Length: 425
DNA sequence: TCTGGGGTCCTAGGACCC
DNA sequence: TCTGGGGTCCTAGGACCC
Image (tube, rainbow, N blue to C red):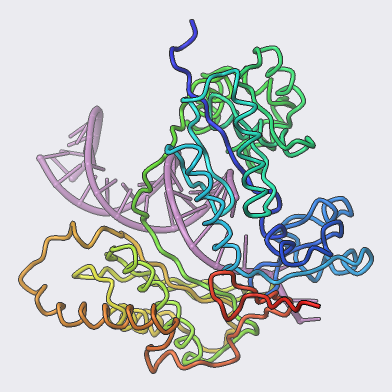
């Protein structure tokens, strides 16, 4: 029996999003291979189709990919999150016009509930979405539509290979979908990563159609409940509903690798203070307070004598106050620091987050009121005059920690001073 | 020389309690 | 002193996602 009112879910995914953002201001790169690098110009995190075709792999370290990059004259960009964030907001804003039920899944992806569209008009509708985004922002997207998120993901993968950039399973019969699933590698299913695909491969599941028909009991016994849900989703039963109201996050982590490794505790302290300031600002902007703070430092895991240390401190009175958090972070660092190691990364994780408004004040809460007020003033000032206009002395800026960012386009479409200049005539 | 950063959820195992 | 069963909570580690 067919369930009544089967959902129609579309997945809109921006093609090679970071690369597409950079290309907006570099039309000369439209047909050339392009890659975007992670922080510190470390790894390749976005590739144009042409870059994929010449064999550059996702996540590959930049220095390892350099021979190919030179050989094929690949254009290289450092990541520019101000630009990507702004373009993402523009794309999402357009999507809201097409459905009010929308889950913003990542910087370049969103699930839309299109149940209000008739089955017959789904193809036209998603095609219209695609054209509108391309016309209004210049960003190419692929769209897949199906009854469940997992199938919409499959459809999206197929859409990526089609010229029109769309694929829908809504008006198609089961034979059509099964035929596509037989061609679809298990490793590409949403929720099946490296370990699980190896596991299924070893157990003779070679395509997604076979996975879809796997024995439930066997799967539950030998794998996890998440995989079982994934299989139900492949069969067309919704197990991962759309999450349209953003939930309060549970953690906030700020960490960076250093441009060059450091040994001195006060250098580590300076980096951690900066991360702590960022993390505190972030949770304040979301109206949250933290119950626990973790501080971690580590040496390079690619070198000998890898060292990774973490210290957890439970905060007696949950807070989002920079001064208190920085104080705790410094204490934590003093406990875990040991001399003579070359540290390559440090970070702060604020955990047990809860809305400030939900927290019941106690006898000592009044003590914090002045500090809260101070934080408000600092946040307002920094919003108005730019980040870091007011900061802590302990966050003094040392160039040593500056990220390597040698290939940045430096364009920021949300900040007029950094908009590109066009000269006429 | 050079190897990102930020999330979520599940599971197993230990501590503790009745 | 030893023993059983059942429950909760926490944590670390693993797997996944983008």
